Image (cartoon, rainbow, N blue to C red; front, side, top):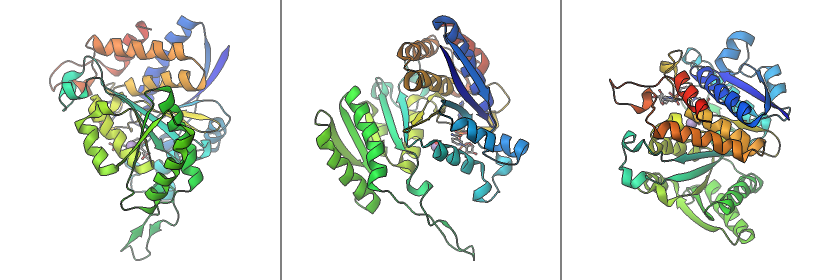
Length: 353
Ligand code: NAD
Ligand code: IPM
Ligand code: MN
């Protein structure tokens, strides 16, 4: 069967980690006798330079046609001064919004072989295997009104959620919890924010539909601490957009490096896959980035878009084996130690498929 995948390499290390994922994709296709047709489009700073738009029309058309999309990263310091409407990050938000992907799954785990690579005690992190379900199309990122006052002396954003927006992402989290440990933690700031009070009330009201799932709530400040102290206690963690953004980078530190984290953004139609990290401009063009997040995101394409659980597991096992055998990119070695390059790491994973 022929499948199609839209590639958006983007900026900085994005093209390098997407190329790494393609090397692994070829190995999976050989092993499982699949045909996958890939088509690449520009986004972000690369698109702004080539097409004067951070999310060009042809990219939008390709991304909203129903095929899965694998994104590297966007972000280019050369354009950081632009006003919000032209900002590269606004292009990424437009991509997510146009695809309708409201549930962003960000798995984070402890890796055998990386016990010494995190600032945390290995006995505390060993066995960590959690998924943050981050609401992706609401909250402060999209709420109106927003802006900077004309005198430049004040600025404002709006945090807004509707019951429907909470329900659709909470449903994804309840079902995920049901398929895993049957434990769901919802993270909010209901002691202060009305949006969080609505969030908690809505999630509580849904719990009756999932009597097999044990629901718990924590405030975001307390959870930020508990994630560092006791990451193994958690399984599925549901939270709003900005809290999920911040907590997933913290989960990256628990794992060993932000470069290890994959993600899948799901909605009622298309699906977008991207590593959690950004364009890491200082690493770009040097073949030193960690491609594990992008390769893990490819596994999620198979799992969520192509009903390819065997293929997803083959990728994840090859990744775990590569890491267990001691191959590390520069983000995971001590200064002065020898590191595996991004492209070499991809070849090692591909050989282990
Ligand atoms: P970043 O994720 O690019 O980098 C944070 C830190 O992690 C840096 O020290 C970087 O070197 C390191 N790092 C990140 N990915 C790595 C990898 N694969 N391998 C090794 N080390 C890695 O975040 P930032 O520096 O805050 O942002 C840089 C740009 O990326 C900004 O323009 C930002 O808006 C953008 N960004 C984009 C996305 C995305 O496209 N999804 C996500 C986050 C940030
Ligand atoms: C992420 C990034 C993005 C976000 C930025 C670049 C808009 O930090 O994907 O985590 O905040 O969602
Ligand atoms: Mn982020």
